[in-house]
Structures are given as structure tokens and as C-alpha cells.
Length: 337
Image 1: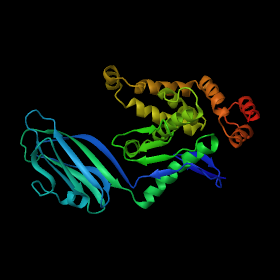
Image 2: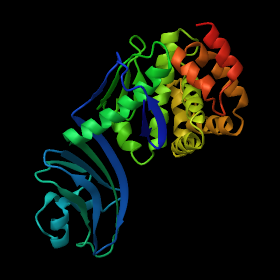
Image 3: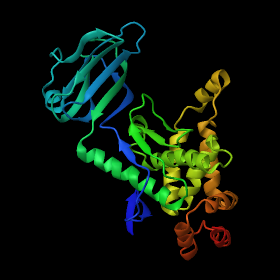
Image 4: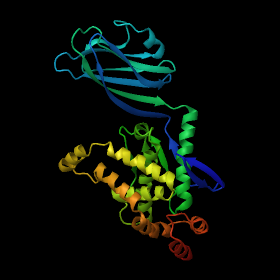
């Protein structure tokens, strides 16, 4: 056996076990970042936009929110070029361009890059500038291998514990920040865009992956609620509650992610178009309630999960029970195998 840490949580994997499912990581990721900057008259800003490697593709959309004076100079420059930048210098972008405008660039060398927003030619009016940075990042072999190992560890943990969990994980660009389970195959797709969005919140990302596992496993097992978002949320929540204090810390990150989303806009969308998802603020409250009062949720899910656990996993549960386990239910499930 070996112990692997995923986002700080220990997962025990059987080294010699052969797995039917696979993890496939795309050789490139796409994503986006949106920000707003205020540039005073007679001034310019160098806004850091990250480290990029040769071959990466960047696209910038610029819009000055002023009612009348909507012009701005916007340039993409390396850190070295940012240090030597002077107003009026030639650059990759637009000089005194009237917004909205956009420009693209394929990075030619590894470096840290900045977006210059130059309002130095204005004497009176400040500019409120919103920009969207969209990117296509070529993954190095090392990064792709690390991501593959990360998601393989999650996949192997679930497949090692549960029956009929031998589906595949695809990590790839989707054109949207999302993740989903295929209704027919139960395979899981994790969009590179959501990895970019949740890169600083590993607990929320792990919860999203486990949410999709909830859909896939319930589907494979023929249990009710496979397509219900709240059921998938509960699966992710119970799995992380079983991980103890570290799992609860991950759930708090997931709550923070939901709290940051615009539930008012979601409610409007539901009124106009319909949506099977519970509002983000409600999802956050449901997870918090599960953390505060886990007993009923735990017993209900243990009844289902133990029925579909492999014998070795049930034996581990019985021999080394954790706080969220129910020994009598586990023993009864093992006796029925």
C-alpha cells in the first residue's frame, strides 16, 4: 500500500491493483481572467498577468467604461519591457485606441508579462478600464504528468473503494468553466477552465470532482437521484466529511466558492430559462448545515455507500472505523456480499 496526499488529504491506494479506467490530460489548457483597473490622468499602470511560456496564446479584450472618453493605450509587455516602458512607446496592442478593442499575441519567450494601461496623455479624465485576458497555455510534460497523477490518485481511490467505478476522467478545454458526467458512459470531464478558476481553492476543486463522481456512481449503481445536483453535492460533502478535519477545511473552501457567485443573477436565469441547479447561496447553506449537523446525512448515505463498497474497503472500515462510520451497517453490508 502507499499513501498519497491530494490537496492535503491522505488517500490510501493499492499499488498493485490494475484499473480499468484511465485519466487523460489535454496537452493545452484554456482559461480567462477578468479585472477592472482605474488609471488616473497623466498616469499609467503595469498590471501583472502572470508567467507565460513560448507558444502560449494570449488574447486581450479592453473596454473603458467612461461615457465619453473611452480611449486608452493598452500593451502586452514582458517584465523587462515594463521596466523600460515610456508613454508613447511602440508595443503589442493599441496606442490611444478607442475601446472596445481586442488584440492577440503568441508568446515568443518564457517570461513574466504585464498589461500596460496608459492614460498619461489625458490631462483631466481618469479611465475605468475592464479587461478580459483569455489564454491557451501549452502544458509542459512535467505539468501534464503532475495533473495526470493528481486526478489518477482521486480516480484510483474511488475505484478502489466502490463497485462499478471504473470510468474515465478527461481533463481538457471545454469553452466554459464547468465539469460534467456523461449520462451514458458515466465518464467524467473536468474542464481546464474550472481548474484555472479554482487554482487557488484546491478544496473547492476537489469537491467539484467528487460532485461529478456522485453523478457517475449513482448512475452506475442505478440509485435514484443520479441526475440531481443536490444529491451530487451531498456525495461530495459526505466524502469530505469522512476525511476529518482536513475534509471540513476543504468544504469551507467550497462554501466560499459558492458564496462568491451571483445568486441573484442565477435566480433571474432560472425564472427565464430554467435550471436544475440549486442557487449557489442555497448550496453553500446546505453544505454548512451538513458540517454542523452531520448525523442524519451520514447515516442515510452510509446505508447506500456500504451497499456498493468493495469487500476490502468494508474490511478497512470495520478494522479502522473513523468518526463518520457506522460499524453495524458496515458489518451488515459485508455479510451480504
